[in-house]
Amino acid sequence: MFANYLIGLREGLEAALVVTILVAYLVKTERRELLPRIWTGVGLAVLVSLAFGAALTYGPRGLTFEAQEMIGGGLSIVAVGFVTWMIFWMARTARALSGELRGQVDRAAEGGRWSLVLVAVLAVGREGLETALFLWAATQAGTREAVGSVTPTWEPLVGAGLGLLTAVAIGVALYKGAIKINLTKFFTYTGGFLIIVAAGVLAYGVHDLQEADVLPGLDNLAFDVSDTIDPNSWFGTLLKGVFNFSPATTWLEAAAWLLYAVPVMTLFVIGVRRRSVTPGQVPVSTTAR
Image (cartoon, rainbow, N blue to C red; front, side, top):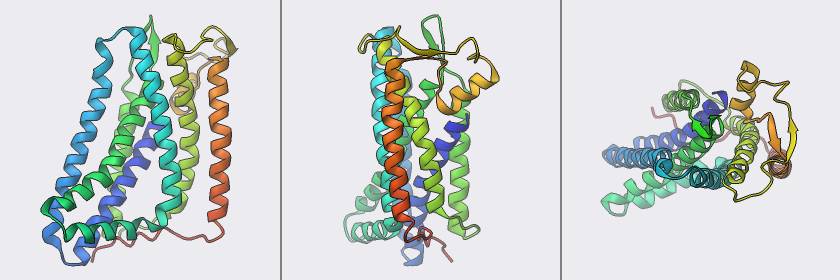
């Protein structure tokens, strides 16, 4: 649940930060009459994201087990690609995010009625679609397998929902100027943690593709500690929920985890150290007074 809470919190805070910047800028420049266009765009982005999540959840159910595993494994790998791009994109562009969005607002305000709506849809919708895809993949990886079927648990969705609610509360507090947080450090720490989570999702995606007979080696185990770590125990559940750890891991799963986690974490740490030469808090400047 904690991993999904963190995903919901981070992704939700990115979206909340975008909305906060857009709304605060319109208020400060005395263009409140344009606010309904922002909220229309946000609403459309949320609806599209929910529809996408519903399609992911209910779409493959009528397929064979192998087809479901193939789709699930493929989408898990796509989700890892998206979240990796998001982690590095936010770390690289967070400092200039406010100015970039303000420029888009100015250009859209001079355009047609739907231009500003489109800005909000694209800005928030990107985060929403990434969130839906990665949460779905992480939830699939956190399910329990029983008799050849996958039974989802409610904990990941609750964790993600609580994370999103927390993100909304933080966004409102930032807008009101009630709190100030170092967003650079927040995105750095959560980015590092999400790399570990993404590595687990990637390994589980590989496992799905092995079960679908797309990839070989399903019976070739790198290790099996099921006798030591009971998957149904609190410790096994904790490892599964946070790190997507599987007590019985194939060689291909282990290789995928290492080949992703080691180089990506190395590049992430190098980037963080380079940016720390000129440390500073992300210049949000969203308080509307």
